[in-house]
Image 1 (cartoon, rainbow, N blue to C red):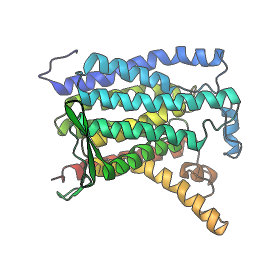
Image 2: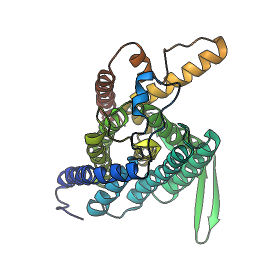
Image 3: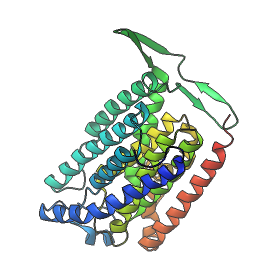
Image 4: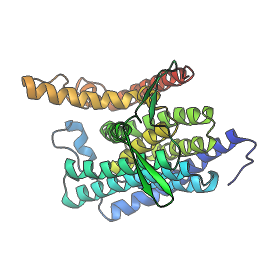
Length: 343
């Protein structure tokens, strides 16, 4: 572990810098590899017509984001159960996304795994993460709100003797963790539709979670969050408009899991819903569109997710991205302010 432990803020910023440099330097090699293997993005046929020019752009840049994250954590973080769990859930969701991306490019279609297969994979990951968080990391199965109000979701639990210990299964909290982790992974995935959008908004959200982790007296998780943000910075150099590479589900599912995982490990799940408000806005726009069309045959938005609605309204892609970055920063600022109201 580099740096003087007496200066944890220095270690957090150094973790960000290491991840950014690793991603920045490795990405060109990855782009060449993807081009050589003809692993290019399949653009949705029903998406904005202007996006058809992006057909064939190298994808799966999320693999380099994960490499940069792991390298930075290996160098800077202490080997604690929390850091292993945070990195583990991120890599597992990244691996699921990688399978999804490979399925997409090898079959030449914009959709990879079936929704059922993807959800089955996320379910296994969420259940394993929740049980490890509660039994290995001591996470309390409760939901905390600003102002000190708390809901105990551990009231319906089962304890199973395993060897010399006991494994506790908090059923209500298990469902809550699944909804948050799987939901946020899919929300970031839906946000990944414009050049630089998911990378930039994830960077801002993870920087806020780094501050929250640090203020929660867990500098190790702060290092993890900073490494995620740094990896996004290195990726954005190559993903800004016009993108040379996309992160794919490999990156979007992993970043969503990293964000939700840290929220659970720091018991700031409710705060994370505000910090990640832009991701939730994107996911809600899809849900509203689907429900409206099925029930009334009419669409609320010109196109969903909502970033495409603004594109179809005449906004330039870069204008949508920058304004959504501003929204993400605003959500993060409000979330950080609410954190100080936690009891």
